[in-house]
Length: 521
Image (cartoon, rainbow, N blue to C red; front, side, top):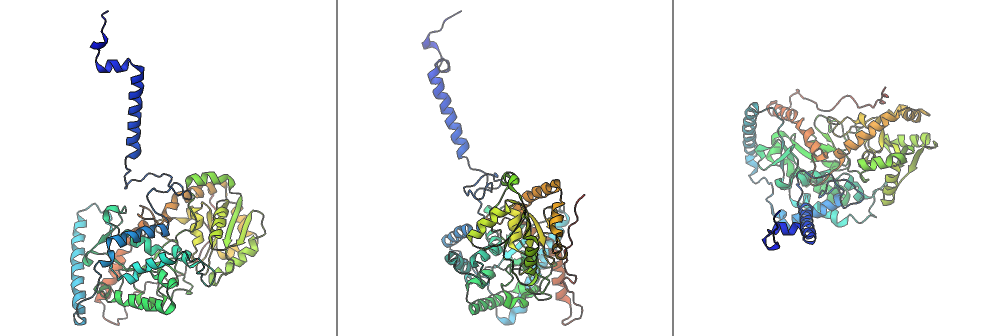
């Protein structure tokens, strides 16, 4: 066998025969690969479901803001830098004598756009196109100024409503107007939703979004100042040619708190209202103002932190309380059932019914209680709806809904029977009935509902950027189903003789009555 001198060896041979050099080369390669994989950016359109820096909110999407206060701060910083205040505002500059000409011109443009779309769709595969939304550029006093007013005052926790609820907590619960608007006006490159697209020409729009912050103005302005601003917003919107064309039927108003915009609601009753519920009792909305045909129910923003799939798994052994409720037991209107339920249920060993506050201490207590309970009682409050329902959902606690007049968000898409128990008020107050009913539910059924809660949670988490299948996305999926009827009523109104008796009523005549959910076999 021949021998080779060291000088005749090639470089690779020399390295492989030197253990020291081999170790150095290996370590260098390892650190290089580590650097590449740890610094490569993740795709914004396909986020990984990882733990974020917020330890109270595990396993949420990274780089997504779920807190109204945090998201608003970033939003307003971007706005101040970009100078959005100087964007052109929608105004009606033509003289009053040309009003009908403006409306007719817009109507002709919309007809041409819709006709072209109709025949284009005939050649397509019948996939649902995105909803096309025109966002009004309203004066800043209705939009950015309201957001800045909230931002500058939200830490004043001493500001309470007459029933003791922190004002700014209520505004956050009803901040759907911010989440929808922030998504609509975001740069297209940053948006993830495919169900809606913002258009910049009125003739291209299916719907018109009115970005007036009705809840912030109601709670943070003096009464007369608020009413004046409401009237100004009303005049500004109703002066628009698109409003006159449809009498507001294709316009969207975020009116999510039942007290907001109340003084001028009767003038916008044809518009689409974004509501927390219908309240067919007549305590909050006048007959003919709201209906499931034209309006949309949106969930409250939850008060509590998310208990995700991992949290649900870890908390399962600790859920030793059968039924939990924390809140005010004395309420008005339909909420009077709370005190009856408290008297009926409060003495059971595995039931916790307690009076609770809405402050930070109350939030901590409620979150702990819900995560230790199998079922969470969700009775009506002053209105049929309550933020407590959505707190229970994100806490993995099966809601027991006792609210006969309740309408639910996105019920055309979601089946709440798969994750909730519905009990009629008459059954719930019968001595011993409710606890016997809950104890008869099989463990396999409970586990199935808890699993469905984990799946459904994403539909109730508002965020920026808005996530596919989040509440913002479901809003537009529901709106898509309303478009044909909206256009029907608009065109029908345009051709009917004025004061004709041929009137189509949209309000529901039959009241909503809850029936106790039957037990599965």
